[in-house]
Amino acid sequence: MNSILTKQQQLALKLIADTDLAQHFYFGGGTVLSHYYLQHRYSEDLDFFSQEEFDPQSITISIKSLQDKLKFKSFDYQNSFNRNLYFLLFKNNYVLKLEFTYYPFQQIEKPKKIDGLLVDSVIDIATNKLFTIAQKPRGRDYFDLYMIIQKYGFKIEDLRMKAKLKFDWHVDPLQLASKLFEVDTHLDDPIIVGKFDKSSVINFFHKEAKKLKGEILE
Image: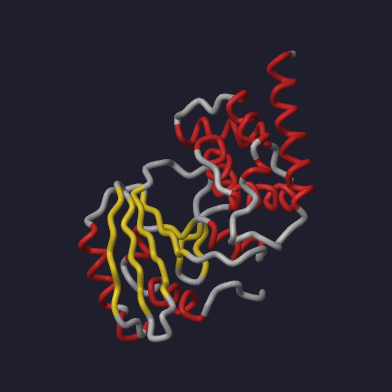
């Protein structure tokens, strides 16, 4: 499998797998989707999630312990609600972003252990993507969900129901349909430019939006 990861990302994952972090966090998000399931685009961040609350100071200690082997010059830490972000600066001004997030939602499928890391399932990532689209979408969320569905055949309505169960939140079909109709206003996301045929993605989500509206009116 060809890796879409940078050398720094690959080494960081290998080193994290040998720390206690690998026992308490699972690896998820767009980078997991790209690296393990689709190989469809570059992803900047390494995102880790825990269903249990944790002390951010313990994460900082672990990050510092990786400095000699990972060879980063310094790092910057930022906290945003339940998100703990670390920006690792390397000699060539490359910045690697690591995120450790308290995410108290039961996964649909148990994560698999791959290369020493607990890896989120593709059905969980798809469900998360749909939920994000219903709330506050980015172009990459539409693109990722489109690519997942093309490969794995998931259905929008099934994902909507899974999102309702996972997040204990009613995903209103009309609201979701309106967000799917907005797809063309989001596809200028720089991380996905030039990666796909826009018309295919737009047509797919417009068709799915019409299905949702049709089911409501029946």
